[in-house]
Length: 96
Image (tube, rainbow, N blue to C red; front, top):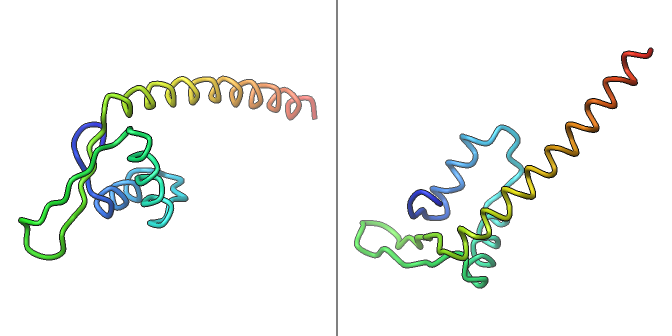
């Protein structure tokens, strides 16, 4: 969605295909989209021109891009902590 607008079920399908350890279900996704929209991180609009049910599309905002940058920093810090843990755990295993 950061690259281009997306709708909920399309986004869920992409996540299921691309994330190796996905624990997201549709209820969590839609709640998260709603929360992000309330926080100003996403904008939404309805597409009623295509046949079938209307789709609610979401587009990231500048606030959303800032949140992504913060999330990236948080992930990088967590990776460092996990690498530290794995290094020390491997040292323990090698002492056996």
